[in-house]
Amino acid sequence: MSAIARTDTSVFGKWWWTVDRWTLGALFLLVLIGALLILAASPAVAERIGLNAYHFVQRQFVIMPVALALMVAVSLLSPLQVRRLSVLGFAATVVLLLLVPLVGAEIKGATRWISLAGFSLQPSEFAKPFFAVVTAWMFAEWRRDEAFPGHLVAIGLYLMTAALLLSQPDLGMTVVVSAIWFGQFFLAGLPMILVVGFIATGVFGLIGAYFLFPHVSSRIDRFLDPSAGDSYQVDRSLEAFMNGGLLGTGPGEGTVKAYLPDAHADFIFSVAGEEFGGIACLVIIALYAFVVLRGYARLLGEQSLFVLLAGTGLLTQFALQALIHMASSVHLMPAKGMTLPFVSYGGSSLLALGLGMGMALALTRKRFGGEDLP
Image (cartoon, rainbow, N blue to C red):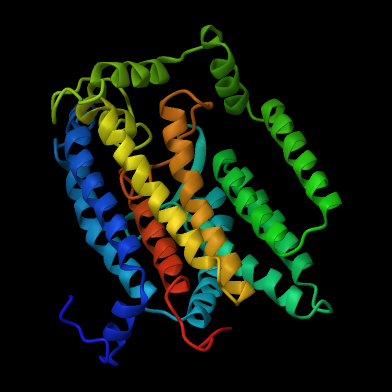
């Protein structure tokens, strides 16, 4: 790769010298860590439910190169092309979200998956990156011409997306989308009185969710008082970190994966803590922090409000997803089934993350003279 000349004017040559190669390398390293942890965690889960030991490994290793290729391909796009892709993708995702309650499969009390050509797809995973870019465009257009009601369109898109997610129900995904939208609105120039109002609305919304959704109230009750219900998964997760200590029990030597139902997905960070230790967990945390903070740093000098808002939304989504997963694993917040980006098992999650981080890489590429900005 280093042999590519700076004078190379091919599409790949321009991409190589403008993309953030450090972030790209960190993301590839996270994928490699994910491959190692899937090999460690999933065979025990597969055997427990009567599947071939390498069932999840084989499925993940088929999706993994596709997700990486998608990330690289999308990172080749210009900001204008990223916007166009997101508008089309968001429209398609909304249609799928509308179909989920009608033809989707119910799993663990929630209807979030739809079957397409034999592949189980979770449309809400794709809603996050597309939503972040489309609302960023609306806010940017509103600031470019205040006669254009872009902020009202963005509010409408948020309410529609939140309603579709809550109908599944998926409160965790709704919280992530809400944080993205609020952060973008704030950066676009939200008056302080409305900042306070939206924060109050969010607090009352969470209180309402506690009373409206039994699974939410159950998780919060168990978080505040473990004796209030079954805290089996969190207890085993904490036990895994205690067993692992600083250096871990060694690859394949952990026991938590034999007991946790979602050790390969929602609790894969616990497997990392037990088998590879606290130091390895700190390295994983550092990689996520590096990707997010470096992305924010590259956006600091951005002249395009659209690029600034879209990039911020995509990076915030990535950071929140990692934070929620890891905080749930160590009982810093109520348990929430959310994958660890590029590490946990999950085809929809992996593809959506490849798409989202590909767009983030495209938006943070070096550009000269505001070339091809929307």
